[in-house]
Length: 131
Image (cartoon, rainbow, N blue to C red):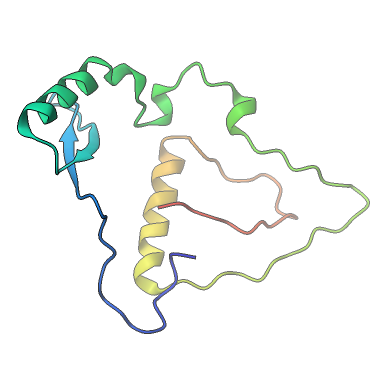
């Protein structure tokens, strides 16, 4: 699924067909990374960067930057029948080097209050994290 260790032991990384260049849209105090193609000309690159900086208020790097976002949009509600027992899935196994990245991401999301600890301990869901 992307997090598991490669069974063939390959250490080669996947490279993008069109390499990307990181552009900071921040004001210097806070980093606001964005990515553009590294294959464009310098003049066009400068125009794109200026356009992105002009419209940087359209991007959100943190949940706190989305104050108008309704709770119903970001909150997942599961239709659970009270007369049925929840199914407990088998836990996924991840490579040790990936586990630290998963823990860091969960801690970051908890700190920014994008996710919270569940109050329902009888239902255990299969956690899917996008990195």
